[in-house]
Image (spheres, helix red, strand yellow):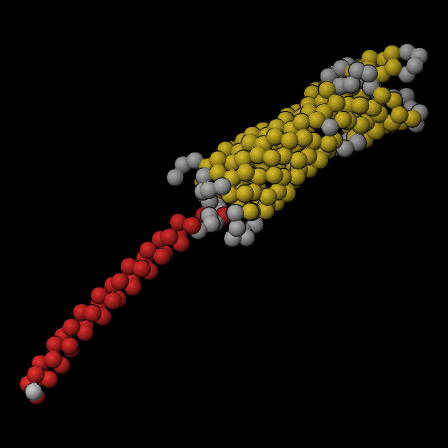
Length: 246
């Protein structure tokens, strides 16, 4: 009996390490499977989204009143010019550094000059001039990390703006005065506040509020040379970004 007990004890001691090893291996396998499943469902991190991307957006803009001052009039003369809302289009190329992004974009803002206000009151343009701003801007944005697919961002940029105004005129009840169209250019700038939704590591959609403008410039209506103040507009756009590369 004593020999049998000694044999059973030795056998159990021999099998115990093998059982522990098998049990440990099984636990490691479960941990690896669980980790891989968690990684597959993990929300993409803004800091991990790096590389080049295309961006495009469509929306509208609401120009603010523009202060205008006559430069070669006989007596000092100034007025405020008003515009109707119009459409905005933007497209460009960007690079994502992680939480920071840089973009070079072309944007198109259109509107109609509706009227002006001076010491005589408000006068409507007829026809109204089509006013188009073509903007080439370099911008920098900060994507605020929230560990979520929704990512707010803020940023802005500067560059160059070319403005094209078509001919217009006014009818004051007694006579008709035509105005020639003009071209102008100057400093362009913008500021944006928006929010993105990460679809996957390759693409996201966004909605953003925009403050975009042009520095002061000079132009003539065919009779008088005028200095136009900053031409600013508020806007709203929705768009998408598509990343490429690795």
